[in-house]
Image 1 (cartoon, one colour):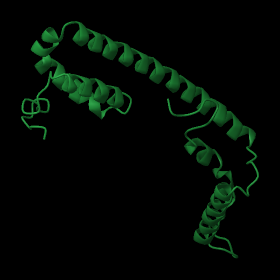
Image 2 (image 1 turned 90 degrees about the vertical axis):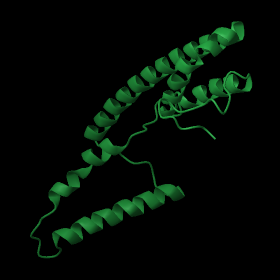
Image 3 (image 1 turned 180 degrees about the horizontal axis):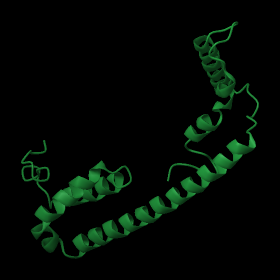
Length: 161
């Protein structure tokens, strides 16, 4: 949800495909040792990253293999975005139903809050669900359904302070 379409979020596959220059390294070179050659490559990468941060670097030219990998990764990320959007829509629908059910019949929801509370608290681990869960949770607390002395984490017995 927070990433832009047509923008690559994960660049790890590019590093794997750009290691073609590592195949040209010689372990037994008279001029440089293998370790020195790897350090030089690492230094070049750091300098490129520094130039990119400062905005001095020209846009990177990718090899056809890298372009193919980028396209495949963009397709994967588009699929992931689609699935996450679908999950977010379903979550929003369910939480809106819960909010409407509480607004319509708060007595029924308050009778079943000991089943509802563990479900809400376990979903707080999800980065997608947590903001919406916190919102509905605060709505239920502000309306008086939960009392701080009654609140405990799911089946642990710990009291929330």
